[in-house]
Amino acid sequence: MSHIAIPIPPLPGKQEIEVEVTINGLKQQLHYRVELFYWDDCRNPQAHRADCISEMLAHHDPEWTVYYIGAPTDEFVPITFVKKESRRLLHQAVGN
Image (cartoon, rainbow, N blue to C red; front, side):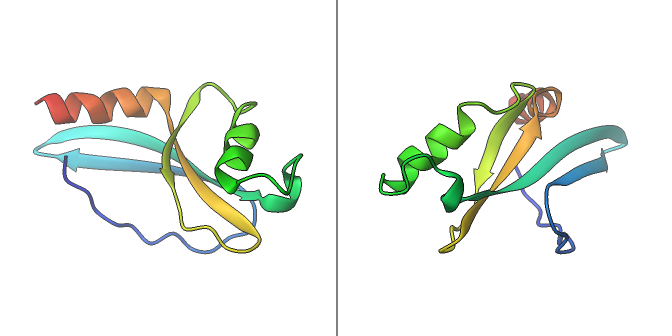
């Protein structure tokens, strides 16, 4: 699967992103969400950060699936989600 990078303006809080792409005349709409997960929100701040991310994601909306985990900072980790219906479109594109 090919990838392109699209700059997203830095806005506070959760970012809902809808992308409409036309590839070889076929239009598709993809839905992404970027959220910042703060280390201070972890129940056990002394735990390994991977365990903390797992804990924070355990109660996440099941309509969205993790697409990309960004580079963590000392304060947070940015996580990009893709809506499950968009993920199916992405998998179909790989199979073609």
